[in-house]
Structure formats: C-alpha cells, structure tokens
Image (cartoon, rainbow, N blue to C red):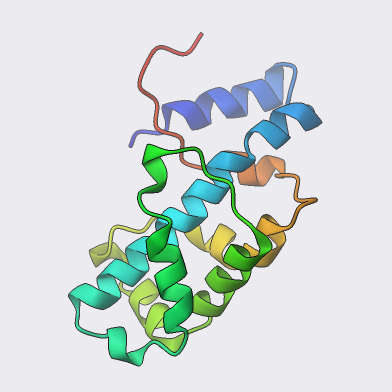
Length: 144
C-alpha cells in the first residue's frame, strides 16, 4: 500500500501525455470496483458487529453481497447498483461505521466514490483525473 501506481499516474498527468477520454473510460472498472469494495467492507463490519438489524435497506445489502468479491472479476455496475450503494451510504449505521473506518479496513478516499455512487454508476460517467488518482489499483508487476 505504498502508492507506486499513484506516483506514476501523477507523473503522467504532470509531465507526460496525460489521460485522454479512452484512458479515463478504461479506468471506470477500477472506480466501480473500489466503490463496491468499500460498501461491501462496511456491510461486513456491520454484520461482524451485530448491527445488521439496524439496516433499513436490507435488499440493497443483499444486492451488494450477491456481487461477490470484486477483485476476482471485471466489475460493471448498473444504475440499480449505484442507487443501492447511495441508499446504503446514507444509512446511519453505515455512517457510524465510516467514522470507525480505521478498524474496518476502508480507505479514506472511498468516501469520494461512495458519496457519488449514482453518478459513478450512470451510463455516461467519465472518471475525472481526481477519480483516477483516488482509485486503488493493485500493482502486481513492473510498470514501464
């Protein structure tokens, strides 16, 4: 978690070719995955702490849980999923857990995506440079 990919992204923005629309569109799957991973971690913490009964939008929670591990497959989300994330994000229990995020394994920048869930899930969503920089992408090899 040292931010190697972020440094390369920043260098490309500041000193390289930057990112064109095609590059940004290709990055959508990572934004989607980061958003789903964050809300899923908050839902898991909700269950671990015995607070699931406090959830109002239980169908939305099931929809997110049914997506499974977002790291194991390419992520494409629908407006239905975006609306579910937005409703869950607005729940008091989720906000309580967000304030305890250091014990939940949710990254600070996740709020950037969770607060914009419906926009990010829209068909015409194009990631911004800020989205690009906030997105966590696991690096497993050498970047040239």
